[in-house]
Length: 95
Image (cartoon, rainbow, N blue to C red; front, side, top):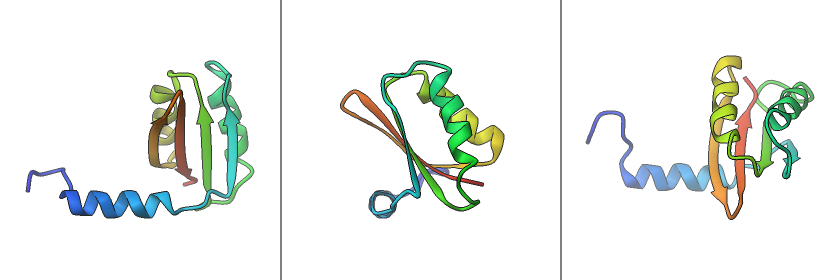
């Protein structure tokens, strides 16, 4: 096994587990542009308790850079990030 990589069987299991998680709150930032998605996310994440999950839906490609950095700097866990059609979907666990 290569250091830092998960075996494919574990990746599939992890992806399946994440897909079954239900967020506590959903933020629809579709159609909004930087910095609005992250500003709204910052406000919404205050509405949930530590350990709860926020799902963010966005169309602005800058969220691919901004949301992971937001999570890193503020101690939240980015559980998943995927592009579905023209939308970006993020699942974040509040730290």
